[in-house]
Image 1 (tube, rainbow, N blue to C red):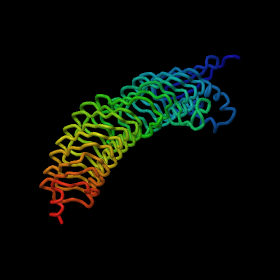
Image 2: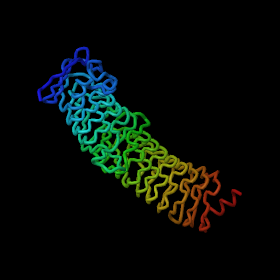
Image 3: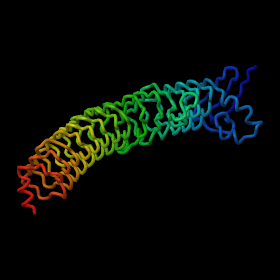
Image 4: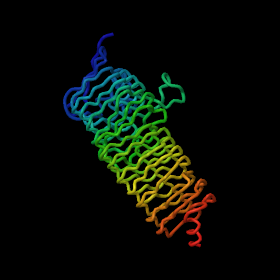
Length: 412
């Protein structure tokens, strides 16, 4: 076969050439790469709309290129889409943008180094990259615009019911500059370590919402993390959480639905844990609330069925509705001295020790707050309680002494 070199223009100051013998594409010049009529090799949509005589010469390099040399500039959308023979790519450090679908359907690519300058990765950038085991991005990355790893299973490598698409091996580091809140489709089979070190991301984020249940990697919070966004790791099945010193709050639903989580270590700098943060984390057995936290908000530990011991500091003044509802294995609880309000169903269904002291600063006890606490025999209610909701101690037949009988009579 005789070597043929095709060429064309791909930007105001850029040209491309393709050698059929070496299957090497060279882009030379400077400036932004553009989808132009003379660069049909990278634009599948234009190819399909073109006449056969025009597209015939460009289709071969389009799906047969194995190596590429790039100049400075951006990687536009669809640039390398369906380059079926492309196995490895390294971008120059001057590239700061990778457009949507840039490497989509590069089904044999195993390694992609995005260099040190990429700040933006477009959606579906690695769609259907079945064999990609190494993807490295820069420490200045700011935005991943949606599901970059989405796609259908590789039928040759996975069974029909599998949703895994890429066997990543690299640690994926989300730097302090990262600020995106878009969901990413984390279709892993052999997953990497994930390091989340974003300092100022959006307050609500679902980046890892669908990190699938067979994920076996480690999730690490880096030293620059100042808060955990709402919904960040909802249903992410990690086993251990260690938040760094300097982290100030955990957003609502941040770790909810994680039924593998058994270890939670919170920093002394933490001041707030918002609602449903650990809801449904069914394997947590013990947790210590830091001294600066002033409220245990609604449903924070709702459904943590394995939870046995909670250390609540005296700084906590509020225990919200359903805070510990559905925690039947709690074996003891000491209510903090600064507590003023106990929400409805706060300890519904808990089977705790046989005595309970409601601190003097408590003003209200919500409906069903301690309902179902069948082992309770002795109850002392603080002098400032003015409101007890319906059925607050439903199932209290075991109460035989203390202030409860006298207090109940006085109320009615």
